Image (cartoon, rainbow, N blue to C red; front, side):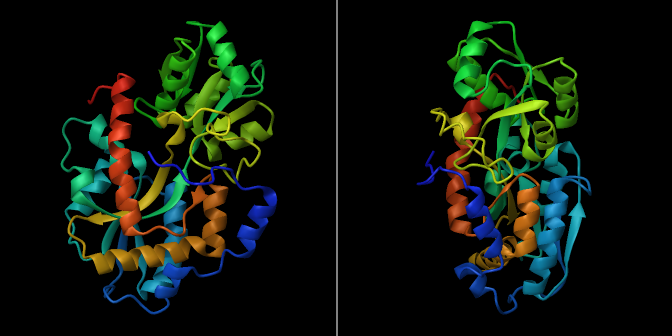
Length: 338
């Protein structure tokens, strides 16, 4: 898997500069100054989660700004359930005219292919990748009473506690499981996986002392990190996270294995067969919306890393490169399709 040239994260000065320039329009945004040619009626963005969640909020914030560029309203259509398959199916069955798209996650748009035996569509062949709007890294955290202060000490600690420790993640086949499985294997720690139905119960068990290790999203973990109840040791992906600028990436700490280098994303895709010019217009409009002051602010506040320079071609290459890596990691972790 290719890595970005500079994996070092943003510092506070860079974040201030980012905020100051968020309204600037990049090359793709400049192409979207005039109204798009295909948007002849209100557009529908399907979200595979209930209203009120981080993905839904970002969809609505970006939708408001995209509407200005499209010259049409953008309607967010929440279709939760079945791990995102319901929402994906609705988009796959829509006309490939750019009027209906999916704003989904890596799991709903990629890894579901390896987690479920019977699905109504294959995301890799039945969706058209348009543009990523942000990266969705996760953090390794431990409880405050854990002796490890950094990743190196953590690896030594779990090795010394071989067979005695458990870690939590937000579900079977989650990125958290794959990353912790990799760490456990590297340290020959034989840690047990506790799969929760979401991050909230995992965090509650960590705060209650049932488990001492977990991996999850910044937005759910940060309040407890700030309160000193949890300690963040590292984050996945190629760069530091604006919400936790002092926490190194796994790569910075010397760990570059696939499960630790990969990072999830939120992205927009359409049904198979979308014309290339429509795909490029979608990317231009989405990039401009992400680069807006409020778009940047909301994405960073949700614990994500904004992406405002993506293209359909770049995203398609990344999608194709990452898919088999996720598949191999799930297989190595012993995750069986259900």
